[in-house]
Image (cartoon, rainbow, N blue to C red; front, side, top):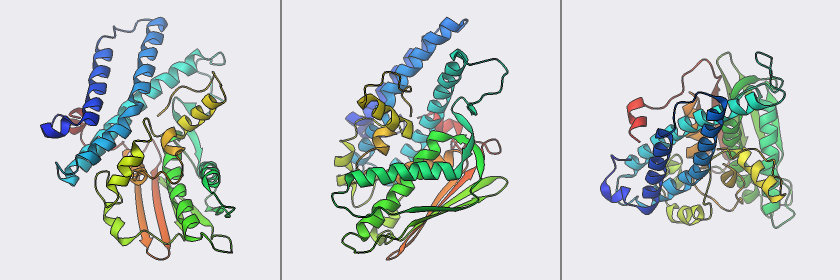
Amino acid sequence: MQKLPYVVVTNPRLSLVYELYYKAFESFRRVPEIRSLEDNDAYCKIISANLREHLAVIPNVTMGVVECQGLVAPDVMDRFINTMLRARISRRVIAEQHLALTETFNSPWHFPQARSEADFVGEVFLKCKAKDIIQQCGKMAQDLVREASATSQTIPEINVRGHLDATFPYILSHLEYIIGELLRNSLQALMERNLGSAGPPPPIEVLVCEAPQHVIIRISDQGGGIPRDLLPYLWSFSKGPRSESRLQNLKQVPTMSATTQELQNSLLEQKGDKDRPRDSSLGSLTSRPPQLRLGMGLPMSKVFAEYWAGSLELHSLEGYGVDAFLQISKLGNQNERVTTRASIDAV
């Protein structure tokens, strides 16, 4: 961030993000060496407080980038926000992993060296089953679209086929976010295209293909494809013909971290559940109304996919539909992509 022009860094939203990271650095710098479980508990409280405070980072940095699009070349700002988000993922994964391992150690059912019944190692779920994740994310997206629909329009079905037993280790919240955004986009496109139609909309077809080193998920819809004028801006945070409307919508999402766990937390909060899980890293983003379009679901998903040595590609046939290809590298056989360590440390 310090490499950006002064006029950009003085933007109130980017300045707030800078202050949040500086404050976090100061709080961790003062933590003494951890020598006991009590010291670790105190340290976990500091981590949790910082994670909650930093829920404001993504909306503020995105709004700041959009507001500064006339001051710096869009490609420069896109490189900045991509690098910053990769660094943020890295830090949050380390922090949330430490909290998860501490929580497991303090659980009454924990026995050292015993086999975990939950199949989790911290935040890493060892048995992510592609079919189950797709169905869970699909149901959540369908429910959100159904609640927001003012008509009795039929919600598109989601069909899953291919290697239905494909299982791999992955950070569940990251995978849920990516698949949830892709299915959400397809559902919205189909609903809009079939508005007023007498027959039911065509289903969304999801194909799972497993290979030794990776899993590929193809999501195909017949929602009319992506308008040609939007194609150059699909992966951009800071440019495009709809930047102003995106900025206004972002102002309605004051905090976001980017996981479906936060959605579950917000639902528990509404029910008054005091035993809800700790704050995690996209609920206000995932649970936003379908009409509240932020223009950052695809670029964010691409950052998550590429961070874990995967990829995300879209192929659009204007007038017909879109094929989205998500390649997931099985954790353990690839290093995460954090660009270069120097650029990460410079953020």
